[in-house]
Image (tube, rainbow, N blue to C red):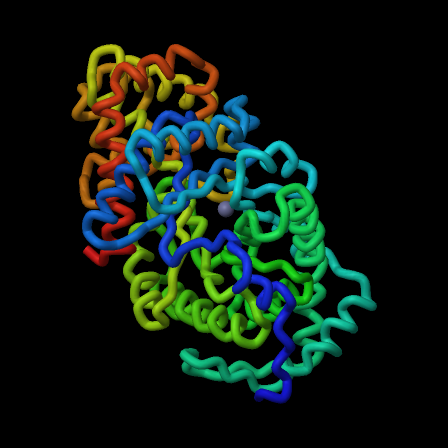
Amino acid sequence: MASWLVPRKSWEKKKSMSKEIQLPKYSVGVGDRFAHQAKAQLRACILSAEQGVEVIPVWNKSNREHTIIGSEPSATRAAADEAVRTLGWKKPYYVDADHINLKTVDRFAGPCDFFTIDVADLIGKAADDASVRSFVDKHSELLGELRIPGVERSFTTDRNFVVDVANKYLAAIQEAGRIYRHIEQMKGRGNFIAEVSMDETDSPQTPVELLITLAAIADEGIPIQTIAPKFTGRFNKGVDYSGDLKKFAQEFSNDVAVIAYAIEQYGLPKNLKLSVHSGSDKFSIYKPIREAMKKFDAGVHLKTAGTTWLEEIIGLAEAGGDGLQLAKEIYADAYAHQDELTGPYAAVIDIDPAKLPSPAEVNKWSSEQFVSALRHDPKSPKYNSSMRQLLHVGFKVAAKMGDRYLKLLKQMEDTVGKNVTTNLFDRHIKPLFLGA
Ligand SMILES: [Zn+2]
C-alpha cells in the first residue's frame, strides 16, 4: 500500500511552522437570521464547557439568508464579537460564509474566517476529458479492491467506475479550487477555515465517492477542514430526520473511516472532519453520529442553524401579550404566502397543507397552545410539524416587519434567549457532544 502513498502537499509542512487557523474537534454551526441571539447561543457553548466539553461556536449565515433579510455579513461578525466580549468567551469562535460561490463570496471576505464553498450545482457537469484522464491515471490506488480501516466490507472499483465518479465530481472540485484560491488571495493562506459542501444536491454520495472526491480535493490543493456530503435520507428543514437510520449509521461511520484514511493517503489536514448540514433538529441521527465519533475518536461540525429563529417565535408566543399577537400575525402572513415561501425550499420540506391550522383558529390560541404546536417535541401530541416547517421557511415575513419584530425581540429578550439557549444545549449539544 505504501508504494502509492502520495507525497505530502507543501501546506502540510508549512502548517506546523505557522499559526494557521484550525477548527477544533467539536464545533457547532449556529445560524442567527436576525443577529439578535448570539449571546443566547454562546451561552449553550458555555454550559457545555462547564460540563467539560469544548464545543466551538461558528456563526453561519448564507448569502441567500442575507439577501432575503437584507443584512450584511458584517452584522453577523459584529453580533458574534459582541457576544464573545460580553460573556467573556476565551476559546475560539468563527464566522462562516455559508454556501458561497465565486459570485457571492466577496462581501464575506472581511467579516468571515470560515468559508463553506458550495459546488453542489456543478455536480454532474462533466469535466473535460483530459482532466478526467489525468486524474484517473494519477490515482491508480483507487482501482481494484479498496480496504479502508474501520470499514467492514471492502469496495471494488475499476477504471470505468472511477471515470464515472470523476465525471460526476471533478468539475465541481475544480470550481471549489478556483473559489478557494480566490478566498486565499483575499484572506491570505491559513487565515481561514475552508469547507467544501455538496449537500444541496439530488443524490447522496457513497463512501467511495467521498474518497474519490477527497483525492480530487487534495489534488486541487484545498486544505479543507470540513466536508459536507449529502447523506442518505431526508433532511427536511426544522424537523427530524426521515429515512433509514440503520443505513445512515453505516454510511456515516464509513464516511468517518474514509476521512481518516484520506487524511493519511492524501496529506489532507489532520483535523478534517464531517460537517453535518442538518437543516436543523435531526435528533434521531445524533446517536449514530456520536457512536461513529467514539469509534474513530473523530470530531464533527454540526450546523443546526434555523431553529434559532423558531425559538424566537416560541419565546415571543410564550411571553404572551404583544409577543403572542406578533407570533400569530407572522403565522397568518406565512399561511397566506405559503407557495411563495416554500417554493425555494421545495426539496427540503414536507408540509401537509391539511395539517396547517387556519389563522382564524390560531388567533384563538393561548400562549401554551401556540408554543406546544411549534416547539420541537416529537413526542407531544400537540406538536405540529407542518406548521413548524412553514414557519421555519417563513422568516421573510418577520424580515418584512423590520423594526417592529426586532423591538419585540429586545423587549422579550429574557424569554426568547432562554428558549434559544435551552434548545441548543438540551436538544443538540447534550445528545451529540455530551452523550446525555
Ligand atoms: Zn447546507
